[in-house]
Length: 409
Ligand SMILES: [Zn+2]
Image (cartoon, rainbow, N blue to C red; front, side, top):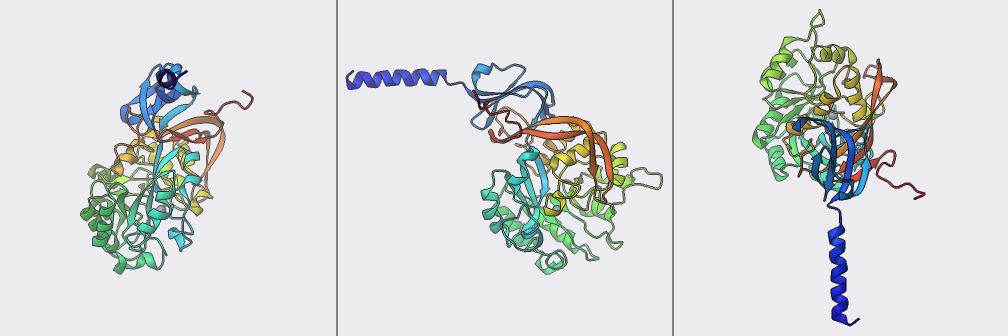
């Protein structure tokens, strides 16, 4: 064969190969899709191409995908969004600026989580370090809230009490340097009797046009919690640690206090922020039974919480499932709701064109115990397990090798 005809033959072969190439990289076949944003709760096939959701339909031809994963009997949900974690683990600086943080990839994907928000571990002085060490080096999508304290969470009884390092202007201008990456302002652990810390955080939030997340720490009569949620916080601001023992939750007859409903009506967001010490069944069970459920479910993941009753995102979600919340509702509050709270409406749903962040979950039936912050147990019959997690269409967790070939074939 002479050179030109060889070249033509090569083009011909390449042309056939291109023609034969299936349009989808991956097809999740036969799963029960739970996509609260799009109100889809049904058996659907989901096809992925170039990291995006390419098609969602009742039936998609297997021949159209390079790999087909049978997910029948499983739940397909948007990749989970956990808006309260501590992931500043790149240094061995004190407390949440290092020693208590965890690297996100070790804990997220195995829990179906694709996106986390670091809740104020760093402030304007050390956010760049956090970004360089963790955000830029994680496969998990890591977003952040800046602590109103410039040095972040580098000491609960020292650094975090220093009101002279709570600078709304510098905090807001650091946030403005990273639009979309910095998604809020955090205030935590402040023990003083006045409102200074909360007010500075809200001022930074106003300047940066971002929501504020509050960990109210010590509840003091000089600054009642009721005033925080009824007056100080703006609509869209987030109170985390909803089922903390100190939150006034129930009247003597066990009914949810009306100020909480009023605060919710004002637009204040209530987030779980389970943590090591911030979740009691004696608060959560009666509240959930009466319909006072969290807007978003989050973990407050860190070294202490992950080894106590919190454990991981799916364990926290399983608690709500076993308290009687429907699976659809649990997923809504772990995907689309938190995505909106942090103003990332492109996340938390399975829409054609959106990033293919997906969790494939199994509900295991059995006899399970769930532990709260006072080491009280809730007995349950269901536990959520992550079979498969995709981030931007890539398989980043595959518990039982669903997306792998049998070794003998
Ligand atoms: Zn926290």
